[in-house]
Image (cartoon, rainbow, N blue to C red; front, top):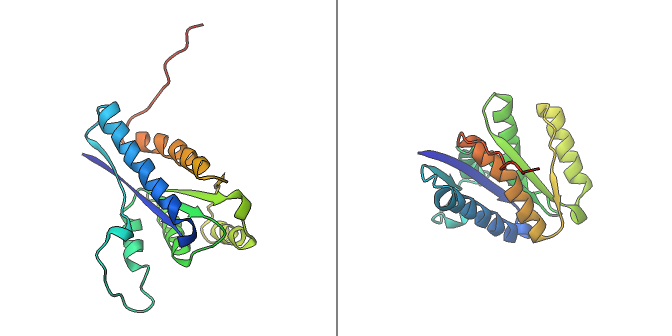
Length: 172
């Protein structure tokens, strides 16, 4: 069995897009299992909203999510106008993992209308601290985000599962 773990991170302001992202993952998994007959490939993600309630020590709110990031093959980060601290920590952790030679991807989505100088500064810091440039996808609507995520994740999932896809040849 090939398990592909994809972690979705965002702030409360765009939490509805986390739901869209979870739906995209569910549909990718369905496509692999039921349309492509690849039941040995599973797409999963951890959603903190489904965890049992717990108490954590002050300053350790991100500990569990950072552990889950370390178990993931990819991180999907979604930004509106806010720049959530935990999402920043999760992206930094993925950049550390990549710097250390681990095969993990990061897919960043930024609402075009809500881009901020703080986001630009954060991406510049990542480039400086980890020598990795974040090339993000822009979205303005839920549908654009959904399409962009599906477009980014489909080839990623196929590669991670060891499959390649070539469209059928078009007769001339």
